[in-house]
Length: 178
Image (cartoon, rainbow, N blue to C red; front, side, top):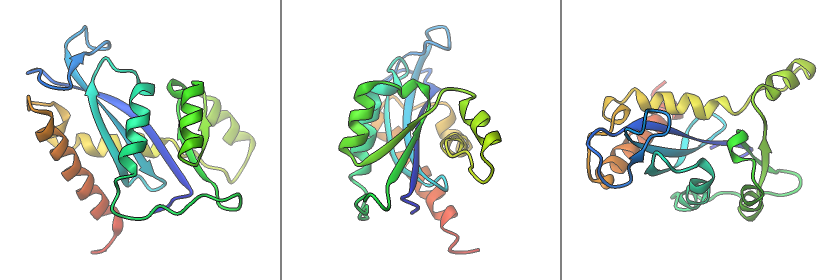
């Protein structure tokens, strides 16, 4: 696990049958949907995933996502001044409570507005964008057809499938079999 950089973001998926932890999707004419908040490491390996209704804001799920990371079966090294751990977030997380949560969990928050990161990279050669890895991991999760549209009414079944997909992605990214 590359602990130097992490990234977090949320995405909404359809949930036509409704059920637990679903809500009206503000981007899909109020149809039933669910939101998953995901925390990944620098290579896109999922570290934590949390579910809620599609009408929940990203900042309300952020604390639960960080708490879910604490349940990992491996030890996270303590960040130091020489080896800080950065957390890349988009503009939807630009709130004082998010910055406090990052400090509480030992992360250095890197919250950028849209387009700001691309402009900064053009000025500084050698630096690279880091927030896109969470978007790519969301795309990988959507390749599991069962997760693209949520058909389960019980959120435990859907969360179990999400955890299974995250495990498959982590196994594939480990490079054990080439």
